Amino acid sequence: MPNFYVIHNSYAGKDRNNTNIVNDIRKLHHIINWFDTEYVGHATYLAKNLAKTLVDSDAVVLVIGGDGTLNDVLNGLLAVERQTALPIAYIPTGTGNDFARGASLGSASDALFRLKHTNQVKNLSIGKIIVESPHQTTRYFVNSVGVGFDANVVIMTEQSNLKKMLNKFNLGSYAYLLTAITAFFNQNAFQLTLTNGEKYKHIPEIMLATIVNHPFFGGGIPILPSADLSKFELELLVIEKVSFFGFLKLLFDLKRNSSHLNHKKVHRYMLAKGAQIHIHDIQPGQIDGETLGNGSFVLTTTCQSYPFWIN
Image (cartoon, rainbow, N blue to C red):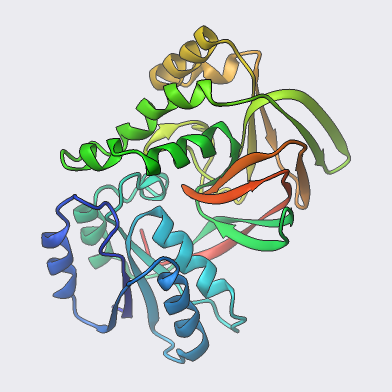
């Protein structure tokens, strides 16, 4: 078993009872250091410090939290150049836990059981975006990057009390689905231009553009079932603006059997390395379920592998 350096977000999945699973994790052998996050961005800071200072060849960074915590740690680790990347282990204690679904980890207790029986790293796909507008930055993600409707859902869910209420009954993932109805009426159509290798596509009126790394987003919604963390490919899903009844049909088909992908207003593109997505109008963005701010985004995308201590 490796040496674990734990980054734990005790606020993840707030109002859910994660005490028992955290206590079980504390009993693991080979826990060298345990860090509890204390503020927004602290997980990134802690990960950067580990990446800068760790010389332990058996080190694994064990993340306990939700998708946002995992994203923070990944970006912190990759902010520091190292000869060998620090592997990440993960116990999902958040609300959405989409990465856990995509990686087939199961619940927090399932993931802990699997962790105890893991003996080697597995290289999985992560996405990388270079945001050239509104502010130049580089970000990595494990789930998805979205502009428009899905980002609106994320923002509205986080701002409402619905998620907190549903978390008390372990139903927090349904908050995304329920909020989607309201978000639809707040979503304006916007333009997208895609430069994908030698191909060029302009779509004048869309409501959602999401770069997908695995099937799930929004707390378990299988938006693109064919996506796979082991394929090292990113796909772009674009949905044109539809009527409210068309939107309800898309939701129904999505939840029923993923036949939403056959809708004439739904488009999917396998992204070439360096594909560029230009959003012409001011829209909200999200990355792994956390806000990316508002802007007329220009995103350059690529995919790479990262070592995870999971099986």
